[in-house]
Length: 239
Length: 296
Image 1 (cartoon, rainbow over the protein chains, first blue to last red):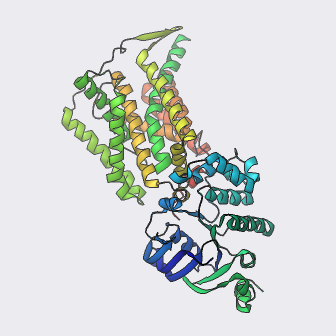
Image 2: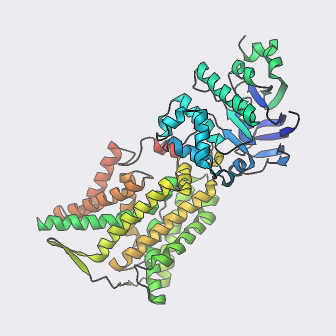
Image 3: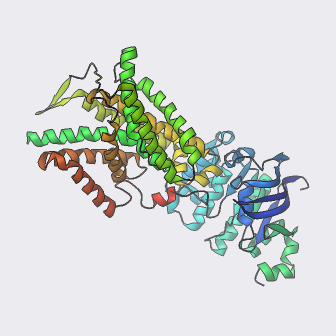
């Protein structure tokens, strides 16, 4: 777990003239589950969307597997091994679950063995098999998140980014979803970056955690150390 | 009874024409969310394309889609790439640009032809078919049949091919589509090109039925807007059914009320449907909002 898989170096990005990420630097090693925590407006979603190519990098560098991806267009990144599950999942509501999964394998390197891949993600989330012919917009909150994660996995990513996967889910469903993702990460040596408001839950499954504040990484440490840090408990875990 | 059957047949066949013209308009609006005011002019260009193919190569207008559709597809791609794409993010400006395009095309053809009406004939132009008590011209039947085939083909492609699914995905959520690896700009260009190609097809099939003039596109564009809204924005089967409804409404009101009132009646029906069912007959409630999701 020593090789750096994703490295952000003094990244600045935002919307138009408004800068959200300010000289942000961060490293994630291969196979690591990294949690990004912070208050509302700290820049967590902006961070994921900048890595995912949806928000342009104004300056600095983002390297994935040693290659610069900071200026690569969003639609080319699934082909480079990155997948982002946006907040709320953003499934295509008037398409079936199966069609959503098929679109997850849209980029040319993922179009082979799509049927087998769908079976594989359905083994992980069996409810999707039952809902395969149903419009994604008719799924419950938990099913929607599972479908969104499954759709992202269809592209065979090496880096999976999840933005607030617990939104709208019960604590039990959140735990189930997060543990499935972690199990997968261990099995497939997948690197996972999770942005999450439920700090207690995410620190239990993550290897390392990074606290974001005003667009900068304020602190990085092993998740276990963060869990026992009194300041973190008071500021983010409501203890 | 024979009169009613005749009117219904005329309405149905007119509906086929409107359905064909609306298909491309609906695709462009459904995916790119641009109201293309120049769509009627694309139909007119298709008609002149059929005329040119007939004059230059002796090609029958019903065979001319083989050359006219690819040419219109390329024209549509060029229009999107060099006129509409630079205005992305400014939907009102895009609409004004299509209106400007309407004037450029119409006046361009006016300059080239001097505004003289021209006719294209096909070897089936004078053939008619008797169905029971009514006599129908074969070209009109052909328009209805090919409108049905084109609608079914487009629906099938959107439903079952990966590229078709990508078009639907872009129509529903552009940001999520990008995250799937879909080149949204390329899908926009493809959709606009396809919309123009369908207008070209409509032009070729309608060329033997009308006297060609640079202003003829205006005859189709207003009913086509009514068709798109009635059928449901972005719905392919909706464009077809909407076309038939508009054709029948025009034919029945023109015969039983007054020909001068046919558009008034049509747009009364249009307003009533809009009030009662804003998503249109085949539109999904809420699809409009979802389709407008941007990179927010």
